[in-house]
Length: 153
Image (cartoon, rainbow, N blue to C red; front, side, top):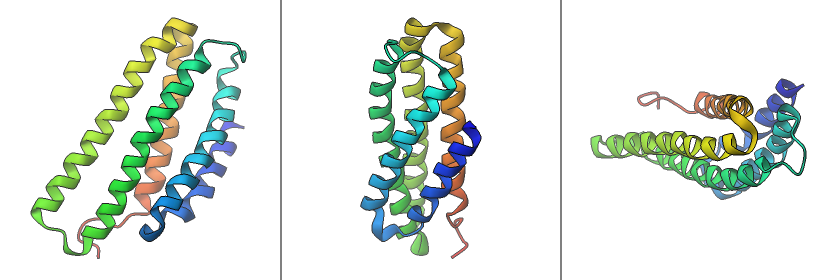
């Protein structure tokens, strides 16, 4: 069930990430699509009561994660804009920004893992980290697969 729901979310979002000129609309669409459907997926997978302290931590996490993903999408727009005439300087800057963004996502997960563990224990916190990793990797793979590699244009 979780796989079907998540694949539907990815398939819904993919058409919206292919045109760099509509990036602001895409950000809103992706964030709204992945925000609500993702929450339903987390609710189903985690099976926690609505009054669990987890949900307060989760909402804070999601706000920060969405900001990092917005930065990632803007970075993709910048990549697509610069790709046809990519210079050494631009390539270096884009690579460094991408690594910083990835590190930010990892750091965010680590920061919130401690808070989540305090609320629901290590096993359930690890369960959330596993789900979050799966979701992020699937989304990033779907986005990356739609992007041209350097030198392809």
